[in-house]
Image (cartoon, rainbow, N blue to C red; front, side, top):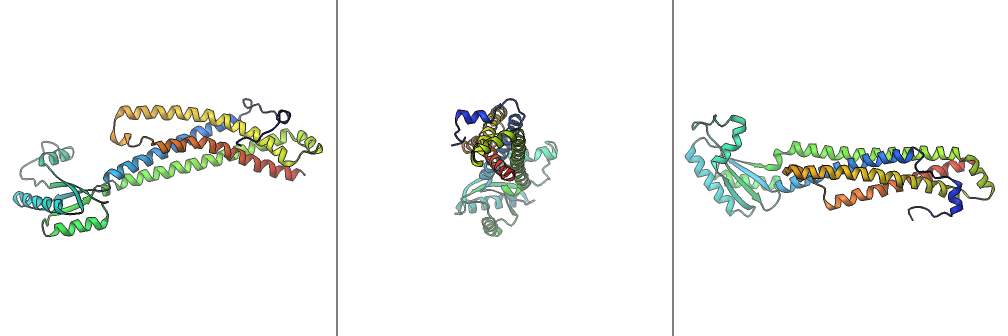
Length: 297
């Protein structure tokens, strides 16, 4: 059971008053921030996984040859060799017009001249990942066919982006852990405060034969209810914010932003966090109260 069962008379021994103390509202803020940090980390992880899946087997072959005729021959020879290779799933020779459009933001649409050599580009998808061994095999295959060929994996261009996403994931996880620690500290202080407030009641209960475990159950239940109330408030507020941001990301329609939308198992993880917070609060309360009662004997 999430909350230890107690009789109606036992509940009256320790007044609960969930709305009167500051702890439920502090826990609500903690839960709100924890869910936002966890949702951010999960969204970043989803985005990184989506981008990595798209680029896992994508490779670009550039034919950097100043002579147009030789460049065209090498491009055709490379495309034919790549098409026949078992490593390659598909081959797409990028038209020169598209290459020009890709370079336009850097050199301007008016900066092109027939005297400027334009590289030929071949976009290929591998049957497997763009590993170093597969890339070396492609380079060896093209060395005698197209000496001017350069083989680059798409993922290598975005390595700084992946490093940033990984750092953001670790930061989100660190925030969740720190907020969990702060929640435990809040519960610890609240439990000690409750013990000091009801010290006389505890002494009377001891005289009447109550055990430390029974008294601990009373405090554990009270703090558990406070944690459940605060967790529910924080979870509802966090859900509203997450859904608002979700709708805005869908309206923008950007591929990178849409790739960061939470997946079904991410929602399961988020749904479990409030219950984990309640369990953590009750576990901390039980340890704190049991230790304090032993010192009182």
